[in-house]
Image 1 (cartoon, rainbow, N blue to C red):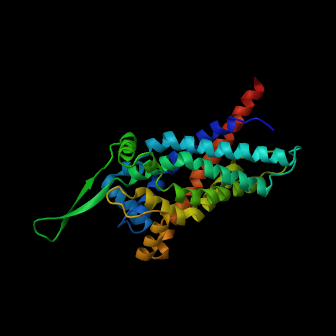
Image 2: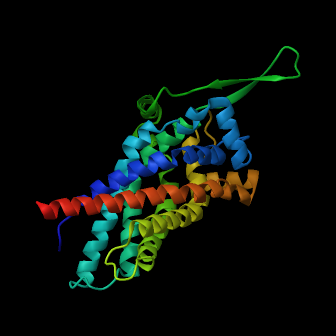
Image 3: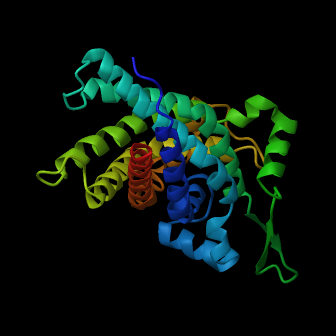
Length: 305
């Protein structure tokens, strides 16, 4: 059995950082649509954020995921690549056959399960910071108009973590982790598997490895597929994680699904699906392209030494 290749973790870290920079503005819009109230359509949400918070509003809470989601993706990509390699070696020591669907599925599910351990707290803090600006209506003296006062609950990621730990303990950092598992285990299968097969299919003739364009396109399509199909459980996760910011509404995953359906109908579980699918393309394209290029550079550097 081969050893763990650390290059996969390093390349995954760099890819994660690239995806955060590219996708955070639309991620903020997605979080507001799923967990907030009164934002309406995607375009209305974008205009409201810009009108009240300027461009900085789209990058709210980005410093924390930039530092931490990179680690989260490092674990996901590192676990997937090494697990797939080990399984493939165990099933066929010649390693000449193309990736098997069963191998890829098991490796994807393992990556999704392990990554939630790190990604749960990261996502929680990110959602809290993205949702911390809320409005409260206060009637003015003439009673015909209302003034909106915008308040912030957290000064930053460190303050947010301290508040959660102080009020809810360590378990509070994993609020919504159950919904995240239900989202990420199938989500990673629909992320890595389409990417592997698409990149092979798009590979130029007489080339042993996919071109940069093939990687970019395959990664983008895989991201759009994965995030689009993950939207219903992503809505539940976002609501659970944004909950308790002011008043707790949901007891857990089942209660969140029940209340959301009873109050807003089946369409609530597809809220933000457009943003998810659209942002999934550039985020994942940047992720996979940076991952593959970094991996190739590290292997080339190792061979030259």
